[in-house]
Image 1 (tube, rainbow, N blue to C red):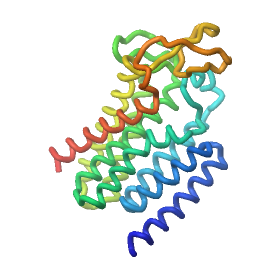
Image 2: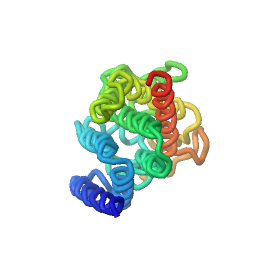
Image 3: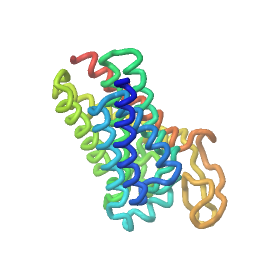
Image 4: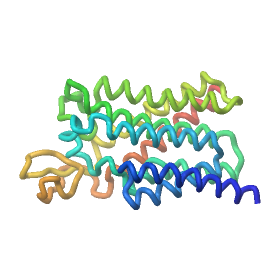
Length: 268
Protein backbone atom coordinates (compact mmCIF):
# COMPACT_ATOMS: atom_id res chain seq x y z
CA UNK A 1 0.00 0.00 0.00
CA UNK A 2 2.84 2.37 0.91
CA UNK A 3 4.57 1.66 -2.41
CA UNK A 4 1.39 2.51 -4.34
CA UNK A 5 1.12 5.82 -2.47
CA UNK A 6 4.78 6.61 -3.24
CA UNK A 7 4.28 5.79 -6.91
CA UNK A 8 1.17 8.00 -7.08
CA UNK A 9 3.08 10.87 -5.49
CA UNK A 10 6.00 10.26 -7.86
CA UNK A 11 3.58 10.29 -10.80
CA UNK A 12 2.06 13.59 -9.67
CA UNK A 13 5.45 15.28 -9.22
CA UNK A 14 6.72 13.94 -12.54
CA UNK A 15 3.54 15.00 -14.31
CA UNK A 16 3.93 18.59 -13.09
CA UNK A 17 7.57 18.78 -14.22
CA UNK A 18 6.89 17.10 -17.56
CA UNK A 19 3.89 19.34 -18.27
CA UNK A 20 6.05 22.43 -17.71
CA UNK A 21 8.84 21.05 -19.90
CA UNK A 22 6.36 20.19 -22.65
CA UNK A 23 4.86 23.68 -22.47
CA UNK A 24 8.36 25.17 -22.67
CA UNK A 25 9.10 23.14 -25.80
CA UNK A 26 11.78 20.95 -24.21
CA UNK A 27 9.88 17.69 -24.83
CA UNK A 28 7.97 16.26 -27.75
CA UNK A 29 4.79 14.27 -27.15
CA UNK A 30 6.68 10.96 -27.11
CA UNK A 31 9.39 12.53 -24.98
CA UNK A 32 6.81 13.68 -22.44
CA UNK A 33 5.44 10.14 -22.15
CA UNK A 34 8.94 8.73 -21.73
CA UNK A 35 9.90 11.36 -19.16
CA UNK A 36 6.73 10.67 -17.17
CA UNK A 37 7.54 6.95 -16.99
CA UNK A 38 11.22 7.54 -16.13
CA UNK A 39 10.40 10.15 -13.51
CA UNK A 40 7.72 8.02 -11.86
CA UNK A 41 10.00 4.97 -11.65
CA UNK A 42 13.00 6.86 -10.29
CA UNK A 43 11.02 8.95 -7.78
CA UNK A 44 8.76 6.05 -6.81
CA UNK A 45 11.26 3.19 -6.51
CA UNK A 46 14.48 5.05 -5.76
CA UNK A 47 13.17 7.76 -3.46
CA UNK A 48 13.26 11.54 -3.30
CA UNK A 49 17.08 11.71 -3.26
CA UNK A 50 17.18 9.87 -6.56
CA UNK A 51 14.41 12.08 -7.89
CA UNK A 52 16.31 15.26 -7.04
CA UNK A 53 19.40 14.09 -8.95
CA UNK A 54 17.21 13.28 -11.94
CA UNK A 55 15.55 16.67 -11.63
CA UNK A 56 18.90 18.47 -11.57
CA UNK A 57 19.91 16.78 -14.80
CA UNK A 58 16.59 17.34 -16.52
CA UNK A 59 16.08 20.96 -15.51
CA UNK A 60 19.68 22.04 -16.14
CA UNK A 61 19.84 20.32 -19.53
CA UNK A 62 16.51 21.86 -20.58
CA UNK A 63 17.67 25.34 -19.57
CA UNK A 64 21.06 24.97 -21.27
CA UNK A 65 19.46 23.73 -24.50
CA UNK A 66 17.76 27.14 -24.79
CA UNK A 67 20.84 29.12 -23.68
CA UNK A 68 22.23 31.18 -26.59
CA UNK A 69 20.25 28.93 -28.91
CA UNK A 70 20.86 31.06 -31.99
CA UNK A 71 24.64 30.94 -31.45
CA UNK A 72 24.46 27.13 -31.47
CA UNK A 73 22.26 26.91 -34.56
CA UNK A 74 25.00 25.94 -37.05
CA UNK A 75 26.51 23.34 -34.73
CA UNK A 76 23.05 21.92 -34.01
CA UNK A 77 22.58 21.12 -37.71
CA UNK A 78 25.03 18.25 -37.22
CA UNK A 79 23.08 16.70 -34.37
CA UNK A 80 20.64 13.87 -34.97
CA UNK A 81 17.90 15.63 -33.00
CA UNK A 82 17.10 19.09 -31.70
CA UNK A 83 16.55 20.40 -28.18
CA UNK A 84 12.93 19.14 -28.17
CA UNK A 85 13.70 15.70 -26.75
CA UNK A 86 11.80 12.65 -27.99
CA UNK A 87 11.32 9.33 -26.22
CA UNK A 88 14.58 7.95 -27.61
CA UNK A 89 16.60 10.75 -26.05
CA UNK A 90 14.70 10.50 -22.77
CA UNK A 91 15.29 6.76 -22.46
CA UNK A 92 18.92 7.12 -23.51
CA UNK A 93 19.51 9.53 -20.63
CA UNK A 94 17.11 8.24 -18.00
CA UNK A 95 16.22 4.68 -18.97
CA UNK A 96 19.20 3.03 -17.27
CA UNK A 97 18.64 5.10 -14.14
CA UNK A 98 15.01 3.96 -13.93
CA UNK A 99 16.05 0.30 -14.26
CA UNK A 100 18.59 0.75 -11.47
CA UNK A 101 15.90 2.35 -9.30
CA UNK A 102 13.59 -0.63 -9.79
CA UNK A 103 16.37 -3.11 -8.90
CA UNK A 104 17.23 -1.06 -5.81
CA UNK A 105 13.82 -1.96 -4.39
CA UNK A 106 13.80 -5.59 -5.51
CA UNK A 107 17.36 -6.34 -4.35
CA UNK A 108 18.39 -3.89 -1.60
CA UNK A 109 22.07 -2.91 -1.97
CA UNK A 110 23.83 0.39 -1.32
CA UNK A 111 25.77 0.02 -4.55
CA UNK A 112 22.69 0.77 -6.65
CA UNK A 113 22.82 4.40 -5.58
CA UNK A 114 26.51 4.62 -6.53
CA UNK A 115 25.64 3.29 -9.98
CA UNK A 116 22.80 5.78 -10.27
CA UNK A 117 25.04 8.70 -9.28
CA UNK A 118 27.51 7.73 -12.02
CA UNK A 119 24.75 7.46 -14.59
CA UNK A 120 23.27 10.85 -13.70
CA UNK A 121 26.73 12.41 -13.53
CA UNK A 122 27.48 11.14 -17.03
CA UNK A 123 24.30 12.33 -18.72
CA UNK A 124 24.62 15.69 -16.96
CA UNK A 125 28.31 16.03 -17.81
CA UNK A 126 27.78 15.04 -21.44
CA UNK A 127 24.81 17.39 -21.90
CA UNK A 128 26.65 20.30 -20.32
CA UNK A 129 29.70 19.58 -22.48
CA UNK A 130 27.58 19.59 -25.63
CA UNK A 131 25.48 22.64 -24.83
CA UNK A 132 28.35 24.81 -23.60
CA UNK A 133 31.23 23.30 -25.57
CA UNK A 134 29.64 24.33 -28.87
CA UNK A 135 29.97 27.95 -27.74
CA UNK A 136 33.77 27.74 -27.50
CA UNK A 137 35.63 30.30 -29.59
CA UNK A 138 38.23 27.77 -30.71
CA UNK A 139 37.29 24.67 -32.73
CA UNK A 140 37.31 21.34 -30.91
CA UNK A 141 39.77 18.52 -31.50
CA UNK A 142 38.99 14.91 -32.28
CA UNK A 143 39.48 12.90 -29.09
CA UNK A 144 41.36 10.13 -30.89
CA UNK A 145 43.88 12.11 -32.98
CA UNK A 146 43.78 15.69 -31.75
CA UNK A 147 42.87 16.89 -35.24
CA UNK A 148 40.93 20.16 -35.44
CA UNK A 149 37.32 19.56 -36.49
CA UNK A 150 34.16 21.61 -36.96
CA UNK A 151 32.10 22.62 -33.95
CA UNK A 152 29.38 20.07 -33.24
CA UNK A 153 31.19 17.15 -34.90
CA UNK A 154 30.89 13.81 -33.10
CA UNK A 155 33.97 12.91 -31.10
CA UNK A 156 35.13 16.48 -30.60
CA UNK A 157 36.45 17.80 -27.30
CA UNK A 158 37.45 21.29 -26.18
CA UNK A 159 38.73 22.90 -22.97
CA UNK A 160 35.38 24.62 -22.42
CA UNK A 161 33.43 21.44 -23.05
CA UNK A 162 35.70 19.43 -20.76
CA UNK A 163 35.37 22.03 -18.00
CA UNK A 164 31.58 22.01 -18.40
CA UNK A 165 31.59 18.21 -18.28
CA UNK A 166 33.62 18.14 -15.06
CA UNK A 167 31.39 20.78 -13.48
CA UNK A 168 28.22 18.89 -14.29
CA UNK A 169 29.58 15.67 -12.80
CA UNK A 170 30.87 17.48 -9.71
CA UNK A 171 27.50 19.07 -9.02
CA UNK A 172 25.73 15.72 -9.20
CA UNK A 173 28.33 14.20 -6.87
CA UNK A 174 28.11 17.14 -4.47
CA UNK A 175 24.34 16.86 -4.26
CA UNK A 176 24.54 13.09 -3.74
CA UNK A 177 26.88 13.65 -0.79
CA UNK A 178 24.56 16.27 0.71
CA UNK A 179 21.39 14.24 0.22
CA UNK A 180 22.65 10.93 1.59
CA UNK A 181 24.29 11.27 5.04
CA UNK A 182 25.70 7.73 4.88
CA UNK A 183 27.76 8.68 1.83
CA UNK A 184 31.06 10.48 2.39
CA UNK A 185 30.98 13.90 0.66
CA UNK A 186 34.51 13.37 -0.67
CA UNK A 187 33.64 9.95 -2.06
CA UNK A 188 30.44 11.35 -3.57
CA UNK A 189 32.36 14.18 -5.27
CA UNK A 190 34.83 11.72 -6.75
CA UNK A 191 32.01 9.44 -7.88
CA UNK A 192 30.31 12.29 -9.68
CA UNK A 193 33.44 13.87 -11.14
CA UNK A 194 35.21 10.69 -12.28
CA UNK A 195 32.04 8.95 -13.38
CA UNK A 196 30.87 11.98 -15.33
CA UNK A 197 34.21 12.66 -17.00
CA UNK A 198 34.78 8.98 -17.85
CA UNK A 199 31.29 8.53 -19.27
CA UNK A 200 31.47 11.76 -21.26
CA UNK A 201 34.91 10.83 -22.64
CA UNK A 202 33.59 7.39 -23.64
CA UNK A 203 30.71 9.11 -25.43
CA UNK A 204 33.22 11.20 -27.42
CA UNK A 205 35.33 8.12 -28.14
CA UNK A 206 32.36 6.25 -29.61
CA UNK A 207 31.41 9.37 -31.56
CA UNK A 208 34.88 9.55 -33.08
CA UNK A 209 35.11 5.87 -34.00
CA UNK A 210 32.04 3.66 -34.41
CA UNK A 211 28.97 5.90 -34.12
CA UNK A 212 27.04 6.08 -37.40
CA UNK A 213 27.91 9.33 -39.18
CA UNK A 214 26.43 10.54 -42.47
CA UNK A 215 27.55 13.02 -45.11
CA UNK A 216 25.44 15.58 -46.94
CA UNK A 217 26.71 15.98 -50.52
CA UNK A 218 24.62 19.09 -51.00
CA UNK A 219 26.06 20.97 -47.99
CA UNK A 220 29.35 19.04 -47.95
CA UNK A 221 29.06 18.50 -44.22
CA UNK A 222 29.13 15.60 -41.79
CA UNK A 223 25.95 15.01 -39.80
CA UNK A 224 24.21 12.49 -37.54
CA UNK A 225 21.04 12.84 -39.62
CA UNK A 226 19.84 10.49 -42.33
CA UNK A 227 17.92 13.43 -43.77
CA UNK A 228 19.86 16.67 -43.52
CA UNK A 229 18.17 19.95 -42.60
CA UNK A 230 18.58 21.12 -46.17
CA UNK A 231 16.19 18.31 -47.18
CA UNK A 232 18.87 16.25 -48.89
CA UNK A 233 19.20 12.53 -48.15
CA UNK A 234 22.65 11.84 -46.73
CA UNK A 235 24.97 8.89 -47.35
CA UNK A 236 26.68 6.72 -44.76
CA UNK A 237 30.20 7.98 -44.09
CA UNK A 238 31.48 5.78 -41.28
CA UNK A 239 30.46 3.86 -38.18
CA UNK A 240 28.07 1.03 -37.37
CA UNK A 241 24.64 1.46 -38.92
CA UNK A 242 22.74 0.62 -35.71
CA UNK A 243 24.78 2.83 -33.36
CA UNK A 244 23.02 6.20 -33.27
CA UNK A 245 23.57 9.01 -30.79
CA UNK A 246 20.88 7.78 -28.39
CA UNK A 247 22.61 4.41 -27.98
CA UNK A 248 25.98 6.13 -27.60
CA UNK A 249 24.52 8.15 -24.72
CA UNK A 250 23.08 4.99 -23.14
CA UNK A 251 26.38 3.08 -23.31
CA UNK A 252 28.29 6.09 -22.01
CA UNK A 253 25.97 6.38 -19.02
CA UNK A 254 26.61 2.71 -18.21
CA UNK A 255 30.37 3.33 -18.25
CA UNK A 256 30.00 6.36 -15.98
CA UNK A 257 27.87 4.33 -13.60
CA UNK A 258 30.44 1.53 -13.41
CA UNK A 259 33.27 4.00 -12.77
CA UNK A 260 31.31 5.60 -9.93
CA UNK A 261 30.59 2.14 -8.48
CA UNK A 262 34.29 1.25 -8.53
CA UNK A 263 35.15 4.54 -6.79
CA UNK A 264 32.49 3.84 -4.14
CA UNK A 265 33.75 0.28 -3.58
CA UNK A 266 37.38 1.35 -3.27
CA UNK A 267 36.89 4.37 -1.03
CA UNK A 268 33.77 3.77 1.04
